Length: 172
Image (tube, rainbow, N blue to C red):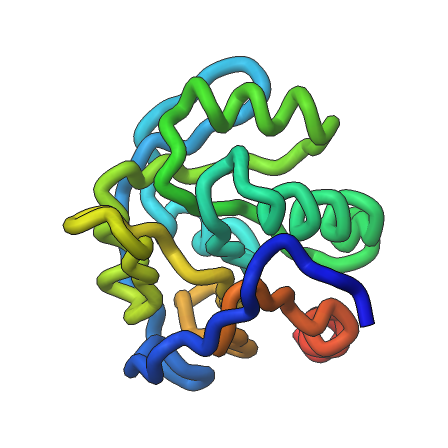
């Protein structure tokens, strides 16, 4: 067994958005490789289904693994879906992540982590009173923001079942 530089931690159970529910709408800065502007989630789902990917801050290793996997799978080329992320990182950090990972995805900036709270997925950071980030989570939303597929991490670190996400994309 590999000697990890970190402990795997079981996360407490939380009530979160589930399949069949309407996902909360929100408006936050949506960042791409050139600029950012305030956009609402409902504006995005009006045009196509959305795969909303919550992840820890941009410099954390889970962000690297998640976005590399999504970039390599290139689902947006095979399915009618828009893939967007959401984390506590600011727009400047998002622009850097987009450039570093050579990704073509837009990222919502939510430094106060209020969206994660609305979705029931905040993760309080050990030793940092009042500081939280979203736990890794994925929600596939249809054009009415109904959750068609949802996954929320039960431990840290934990990564989505990408094959299950792809199966859900195939059922849209």
